[in-house]
Length: 438
Image (cartoon, rainbow, N blue to C red; front, side, top):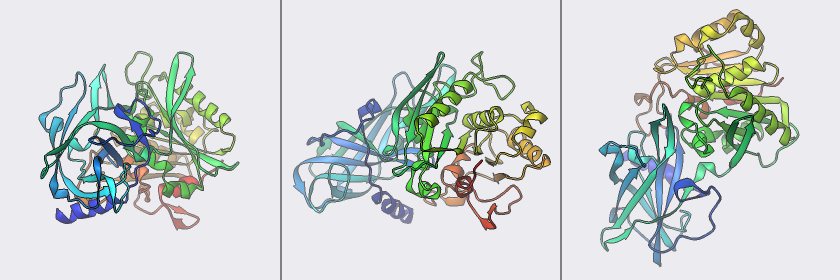
């Protein structure tokens, strides 16, 4: 455990949070003021399982040159109006694994007026997260919640308990203010524009799962690691790509009756969503219309396949995880229409929500039987900890969370266990996706 904590500490020290979000996430524009003495700033990082408060920046009235993690204790209270929380997720202690002198953004200094505490984070510890999955109005969604820290310097009894700002580093690159209205439907969206876009820049579209609906696109990006499509690592693979992350106010699979459709009836959002995509492409003239890629997970996997079925000539490729569209509602005629569209499916055998034998497994086999030449399927036994900090292969997330393998660009094998090859070379899902075109 000590070794894990040391590794995590080193990892967290490499993070440079940049984007400042106002308290309670109401104002997403970067703040310009410095932290006042006696107050603190939350620093939030994104992980495979979602966001975690990994650092807190404490303001000082005088400058400091050294500090010690052992001198501080940190407690947290998590709450949301009208929501009952279990004691273990409502209040408790946060472990301080490192402390250093810094500026007001958490950057290391030899001498400064702030101290940054590095906090231990874990997918097993609900106190790590500033969001919560809340079920209300017949649907569940992740939402930002009140996250109140109390930091005590034990030798002096000095206390910090007033949050002034939140810095959420994964959202630095995104514009979170997009809206699109069509008929009586309004969709919000987050978007990323590559720094040096050219006339042939691709577009990566990601459609969130059922738990990320609402009117705050930051949730669609941060509730899992969807923001990673704008990371330097993945952007370098595509040579710079636009990223579009639309958000439904409810859930993508909502039918006209308000219930879930699994492909048996029409949903209420696909027309407006396609309108948003086409308008975004029209407004960003550097997007290459021959390199538009669409993917999503669960609800978003359903909608990704739905748009491919309805618009088989529009998309260059699809990348779909935890598919929620049931195979029995897809006709042989539809299979013929999409068999030449490159698609890479990702799923876990132990998915308890989108049962693979009802969704992706028979669909994949039907596509192969139709002689689809460029369809792949990474079928995992379980969804595990890719970081190695929490047990690696011995740690298992919920089997529904197979999108982790897509976001992390981990998927690299086909249904039979063989590597996926591109020009004779083994590739991962993002390298493969970047090579597809109409």
